[in-house]
Image 1 (cartoon, helix red, strand yellow):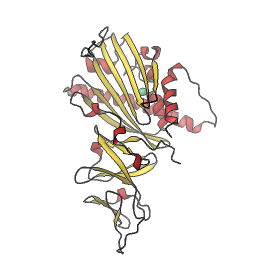
Image 2 (image 1 turned 45 degrees about the vertical axis):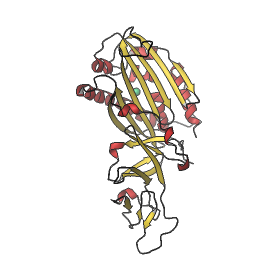
Image 3 (image 1 turned 90 degrees about the vertical axis):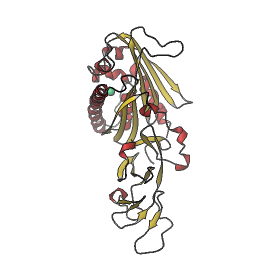
Image 4 (image 1 turned 30 degrees about the vertical axis):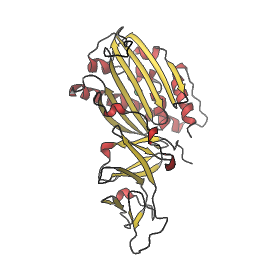
Length: 339
Ligand SMILES: [Fe+2]
């Protein structure tokens, strides 16, 4: 049995990664080859020829079909074999699985499970990535650790006070209580931490121009298994949203992650930082990109160590959960029930 929830949309790639070349990528343990048809539509097929299992990504893309690089069988964009060298008859079973894709908000989402259940309306809303009212910086990280470590990490932002001190973390984060909401209907776990009159970390001081003290909100939404967004609000102390919802006195940043298992011990982390201020300021974009790359690298270093610790510990080793784990435990429980 596959170890991952199957019938969900996962981020497979940034749209710009999928071209007229053949891109191999393992998603939830399944080797997949991606390419674009001549009309621009992205395609995903199992990266394994039905004949002798040679990766199709090592073959050749001609028009919209892949010719296997080993024995020359040809497969079209539906996965059907259209040519077998040396014979006229094409076996009925000569077909590789095709995976449904949705390209939206600069991301290419893949449905890895039962293809009949792939409903595009279930793709999470990440429209800020491709909305002229927002400016975004983007990257992705191949992470040498299990998916659950990234989920734990993103669902407990108290670690910002310690692991990311000086960048995005300040002492108040770990000290400030937060509320957790489990929304079974929407399949989401949300947590909120609102801090008032606190230190402005470099991440926001240099991007927004605001200085200490600030009001800082973290309203996080996680839709297991694959979509996480921190709706961050940074404002001068005491500036509240108006009764009509106008919140132009504040700066808003959305830190977005697509979490995609590659294997049981490796994970793709697709991330973006979007903002609703300084939209055309390349200096702010450059700063936020570099700053968040540094933050993500700190997480990567820590979780890479943790993966090794877990791999080497004796069976049955226990961990201890405390109050800061409320969001992470709720996420684990919801994720566990997705299977
Ligand atoms: Fe972190």
